Image: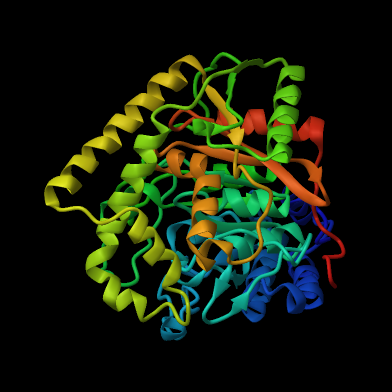
Length: 467
């Protein structure tokens, strides 16, 4: 049952073909089989999951509506709260930081019948790098090849979903953190528009995030198929009194032209041949599906977006850095300190100017997407890299920062994007992302489904490498 899609799992549970308890136990058995090697699931919620599943089975037997994702097991990144469980962020000093309530997206998934089976690994505080290595739980391995990173920061969810430990993963993304693990692990992921999903990333009620963290960090699902991703999107979208940023926008908008702009090498900084080939395969699939595919010279204001993103966030990190640095464990400070050296904090006047750049970048992208409702481009302009290369030295830091540039720029612009696999190269997954207009996740998902239909589904990985 762990091989089934989330949509099929829920349908089987609602029809009575299987019970929610059977679904959960199948996934708990799969976790026991492969997680000791891969280290994706950090805190197993077996007892709670079986209890929730039993309650769902009782409700179904009583004729109640058990929800569109009834019985579907999902993992939750260590930075997203699950009630009664520590939200550790992978940091030793937060190991007993028990959540008093579910974060809004966890609550929404539960209300739809989905069942959290475990927390999932991430880089410590999401600040220790792109590779999923935490002070508290150690390294997570890529199931295709342990010699390359599974990506991050939602790497635990990427691995769990790719190997059938969960049908869905719940991560977050402020510059590629669901899209990169999806690409490296061979699954799909949705980075929603800013304001599409309700979220709550506070450590404590009084710890409101600064502007950059408010604008750029969004929670998003990972899945093995686009249909599962769409089902998650439909459940997660909507408002919550806990997050006044979330807006009641319809799940589908008006029809738009089937026109796709293609940029394989954003900014002309270089792209690996296997990544370019992945973009070309996806473009061919979309053309076959009836889309007008147009190669364009470049994406809007890339350099401006990347510069402003770095300076704004590093300026916000600076006041708290002496304390935060102590939470990161051995070597965990290297990635952010290299980032600070590259994009130095600015003064108040500089910071105010950067807040204006946010609007200018959003406007430039809106004008671009008014002509081309979709952009097809790479998630990462290099193949999967070795674990921790971004924190090793300045050359590695530069390589990774440069490779994720389209993710960073589109997070800065607050746009939706869907990462979808395109096949294998040298035994490793390849993938692309489809970026759309604000609140047009439906357009991104439709195009991703067309790519998936023609290029196939890569996962679940039945026998992880090295197992």
